[in-house]
Amino acid sequence: MYIRTLFFSGLCLLFSFPARAFDFDLNKALSIAKKTQQATQTIDEPEEIGIGDGIAANLLGASPLLVDARAQQYVNHVGRWLSLQTERPDLPWKFGILKTSDINAFATPGGTIFITRGLLQKLNNESELAGVLAHEMVHVLRKHHLAALQKGARMDIASELAGAALKDKGDPAVMDKAIKAGTEVYARGLDKNDEFEADRMGIVIATRAGYDPYGLPAVLQMIEAGNAQDTSLALMFKTHPAPRERLSLLDKIMGEGFDAYAAPAQTDQRFNSELARKK
Image 1 (tube, rainbow, N blue to C red):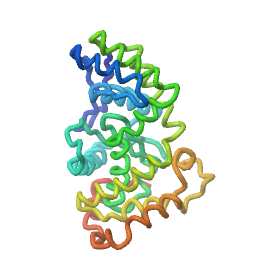
Image 2 (image 1 turned 180 degrees about the vertical axis):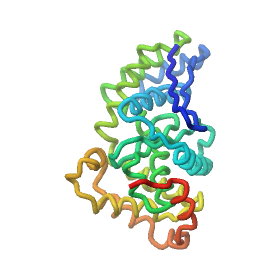
Image 3 (image 1 turned 60 degrees about the vertical axis):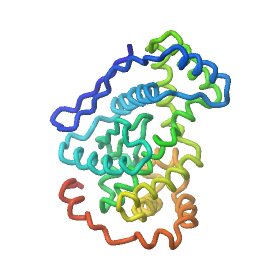
Image 4 (image 1 turned 30 degrees about the vertical axis):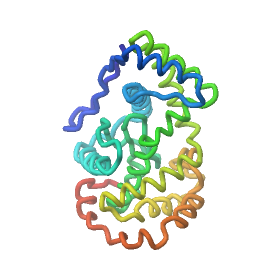
């Protein structure tokens, strides 16, 4: 059985990644095995969450959570509210701040979202935070990382997962292989179209939640104004399309349709109070 549990002491929020038994019935397992010959392979939700938990653990191994219970709870409050505006509100959504000066954010399959302290300190209001979190949540909703894992040579992992299902048990070795391959995706980045889709859908989710739709574009403008040689932005520029390109595409689809929802941030005081940001 694959088990990975993470604890962050001092938080009312507990990041816990429990054991998952991967209990498949025979008909379901046979159906999964058959689909391994297809161009894309379906990964069921328990597998999705298990892979995501392992990837999240690897990310936390590289950069731990920020020891600030109030800030962690606040980001979770915003993230959980956003999750209710999506088609998968029942995923075990978790949100955390990584203790690193890098400017970035990450999503793992199954609903774990990380934002770095470096990026959080650059934000000006809750609408910008919501825009960033919603963008990352779309990667989960659309299963972008799973699709990247399954492409090309990674299809053998999907086949092995199906084989483990046929045996009516999770295979730790197969899961570890999937987790390793999934973690490698973060160093390469996703397809450009995945990032553009996350921008478009993320704005819709944030707007549904009552936030200024221009929160995410404001963050992209901030990143564009940054120095591409800045080491804190290195991974962001390496793994994402140019901010100007993303802004140009958003400008084409937003137009006047979103202007009616644009408004001065009503949550600035809460944002600054809850984060008590230390520059």
